Image 1 (tube, rainbow, N blue to C red):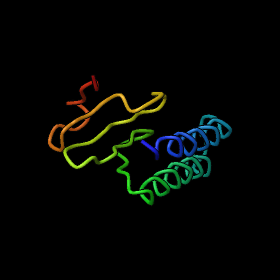
Image 2: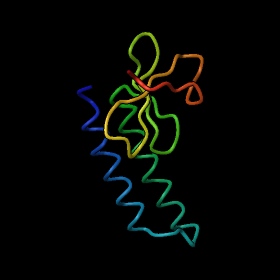
Image 3: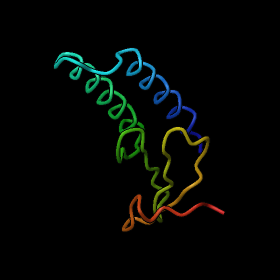
Length: 92
């Protein structure tokens, strides 16, 4: 999947920014962390992907989704449109 390296780059960058913030103590810090996550999600949506959760992305392949979650190295899982994350199956 040609988009995966970009997804990993964007995710690594967003995670690094979150780690720099540390554990949010104030509302301002929580807002900053939310902004980082929202920017990450918006960037992936702009690539035509579906963000399903924090660091969790689905790639529509026409018959279901390839499902990637940080820190997986590649696209190793698939699920149908109906099943979602709980129906993830390892790609053989």
